[in-house]
Length: 468
Image (cartoon, rainbow, N blue to C red; front, side, top):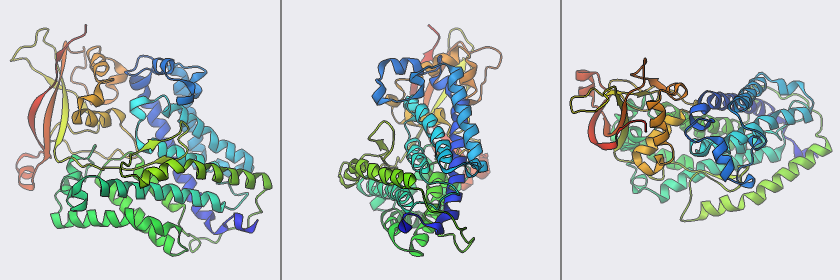
């Protein structure tokens, strides 16, 4: 069928596949390096305990067959190796069916990780990576031109990602309608980057322009994805510019990078390179793509209903395979930034004069004089959850006490998640946590003190605690 494929998108597919493979690599490496303290056998939320209480249909995973930390690490590093191979273009060396299987394996492995990741893997970009990764299985390799239907389904994901984020803002916080949310967002976002201080200090009229441009890009431009070229490519270019702006202004793991990769799949890159002559798609492949399209159409009902609902949900999966999801971000923007500072003391009996030394995290604000670093697309899971815990203790109910216990025990896997441990020789006798209000300093304060943040004590988050 001539209409089935679109050879003009051969180069777009190639760039998309290599970009997706790179993000898979980041995700698997992050899982391998962080899982022991978070969900390992001795972690804060152990996988075996989770699997014992959750039925298979709610969390399908290869770890139902067997779980050990060594097996988990093997799966994560195997996924990283496969992603590196896909990044190098190994799928192009295989027959079409072999390339599809090669793309399917990392999807199965990462689905298995997400479905046992619990709180640590409850972010929208996990579902987004899985949804896009599943579609990539059917995108083909150099033995066939890109299928039109799969390219359309990728645009459908991008549409829901952008339009869902736009609607949740318009329906949510009034500051989005007043164009004032960015007076606060760069300062109160989960994990600021090295340029966030400078973005926050931009003139307020420019912040209003930012907010207005965001509404246009997320509420109007997505509809142009389904128009003929070159209009669709112009829409994609606007989305990419917006995503790069977000990448520069904060750390949102691979969310923005994956949006860029998705957008590339809709670009017409034929002016850069003439597509090669490719054979017609085999019948079995056409049947699989048609079945995929029907499945996605059926599963899209609930996400579409959510988009049209006045009680729109953000970042929700409607099936345990994360095949078609709903997305959204920052329906509410905080006006004040709170941070939890975790400290320890060697004193067996804490006194007023006791010396408390702070643990420093890799990404979240701590020492006021330390400029934030750029970590995205890498995801620091503990740092992100500390931001949620500062919003409300309810977010930390299941894992914060186990975290403190591991600090008191000097657990090496937990300490590897931190930037600095002030007790290198022996664990502290007591650990406490205090809540502070943080705000970006002004230009004058920065020149005078060298501090990027100014902080004020609010209250105790956790009183001095020792091992039972």
